[in-house]
Length: 207
Image (cartoon, rainbow, N blue to C red; front, side, top):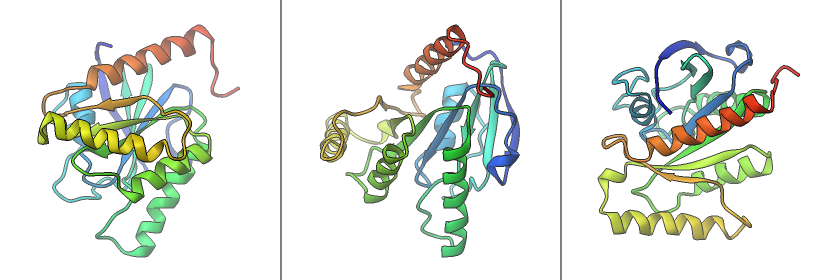
């Protein structure tokens, strides 16, 4: 997919405030500091469209970007904040779950995982929750450039082994580096193919 245009649309405090659900939407989520904003910028060929920060948990709203004037990319708040109060963490969790469960035009959720770590309980639990609620999702490993290839491959395998304990088959898995733009084209191709399918089948999200 060639990115011709990408623009910030709005930030929303509640899922009800999101743009009208008339276009296919692809959301990105992960633990805070997983490199989400960097990956979004790399995918869209922009340096600072999604705001990056050295402070984990910077994204606290639902941020919508319109791409090629025909689909939305959504930057969701991270889950599992270490440095916020319990009440604030619950607010974020409520915001995320309400959006994921109620957004009619959400086509796919990309769950980002830092490839440098072995399977984390919080990531496994979030993926299990997606499965239990019938949410279509893909797994995206980030920060490939921060590891040696063999070690990275080993960590991906560890996640697969862990997930296959409770899954019959695994969703699409992408291994990415925002720094080197690795894996970004594969994600965009998936989105492009899915959008073509939706158009061909005249899917109406308001129906």
